[in-house]
Length: 300
View (cartoon, rainbow, N blue to C red):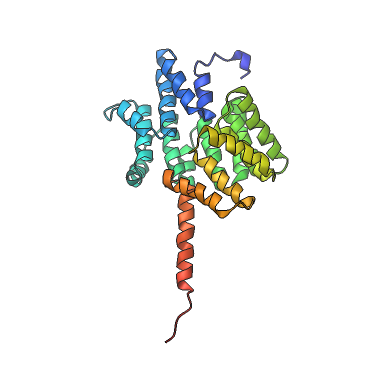
């Protein structure tokens, strides 16, 4: 639909801030913005998800009572519970498995359910959950899962669907950048321009700076990557994606081991359940196992 024919989007700023990773501004806007009753829940959901992104799970769990009957609020409360307690995650996913056989049609509930599977690196189930969902956010998460599975061909098809729905959406632009990074080559510069344009138009955030840094790293522009990541670190010293990219960059630029070790220690301290940390632990355990198996026997 041409932009001039659209109804004004009263949640545009909130939506854009959330998608570009400007979570505190999302909360600030949602707190002060007065909207019609029919938009109140959607506005609150962006606010609660921003608190979850900031790891302020208690705010969500205190605000949304367990007795609430509104399914979107039930879903976002479950997400907060899932993210807050590693020990409960298997049980939550088990309960979700039993419910997914039913007729879950609410697009937001499907999105939140799929995100929990995505966070658990269960990408096939993520895609199954999203199979019949058609919101832009569901499409974007589908693309992320497909890229994790190295299915660039299917990710490009899903991006075409997003473009047909709303090519001007911030989410569609971000998804285009993700796919361009996966394609590589000259598409890397196009991806960089998308992240830069979003930063210029809206606000500079660690999410957008990391996007730029990934493009620079893939192009071998390590100094530019370092500049972007340092700015991201200045804005949020504990952002996991920034730390992971700094670890990668430290290895590529042959910095002293202690430099990357500091970032790794910070990841272990603050983001123990991050896929990077879990993968690192698995590799370390596998290495220890191999060393034990191949130690030379000592004969008397």
